[in-house]
Length: 292
Image (cartoon, rainbow, N blue to C red):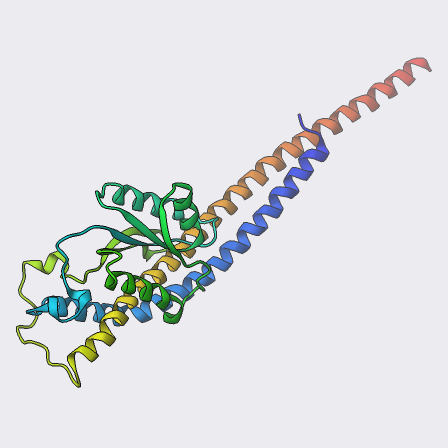
C-alpha cells in the first residue's frame, strides 16, 4: 500500500488537474456560444449565396458563364480543404475528421492534395506522408470572412490555373452540443446538388446582368465560393468547442470520481495507522500494568 504522503500528493495532483479541466470546460462553453451565434447569423446569407450559385449552374450555357461553372470531363487531380483545430483536448474530434477524409479519398484513382486549416489536421496528414500544398494555422475563433478569404482565393486560383480539377471541403458540421457530423462537400466545379439534378431549374428565365455579365460574375462567383469555406470553418470551430467542452466535462467528472476513490483509500489507510497506534498504546499500558 502506498504511504500516506504519496496518497495525499496524488489526491492533490488530481485536484489540480480537475481544476484545469473545469476551467477549460468553462472557456469552451463561452466560445461555443460565440461561434454558434456567428454561424447562425451568417448561415442565411451563405445558403442564399449557395442557391444563387446553384441557379447559375442550372442556367442554359452555364459552361460559358464563368470558369468556375464549367464542367471538366477529364478529371486528373483533386484538392481537399481539410478543416481541423489548432489545439487538442477535444476528444476524437481531429482524429475522426482526418480518418474520415483519408478513408474517402483513399479510394480515388487520381492524385489528391490537401489544403489544411488547423495544425492538428496538418500534422496528422504530414505523418501519413500526404501531399500538403498550403497550411492555414491559427485562424481566430470565431473567425471573420477576411480571416478565411485567403483560403478561398487560393483554391479558386488553383482551380482556374487548372492545377486541380475538383475541390472538396471536409469539415465537422455542427448540429448541437452532442452531435457533430463529418461532412464532405464538392466545392468546385459548382454544380447542382444531387437532389436537383433531375429537376428543372427553379426559374426558366435566363438571368440578365447589369452593368455587365462578366463583371458581375467575376465578382460574385469567387466571393460566394469563398463564403462556403468561411461557413464551413465557422461550423467546424463550433463543433471543436462543443467537443472540447464535452471532453473536459467528462474529464472533470472522472477526476471527481477518482478523488472520491482516493480519498476513501486515504481515510482507510489513516484509520489503519491510528488503530495500530492505539493498539500499541494499549499494549504498552498493559505491559506496564503487569510489571507493576
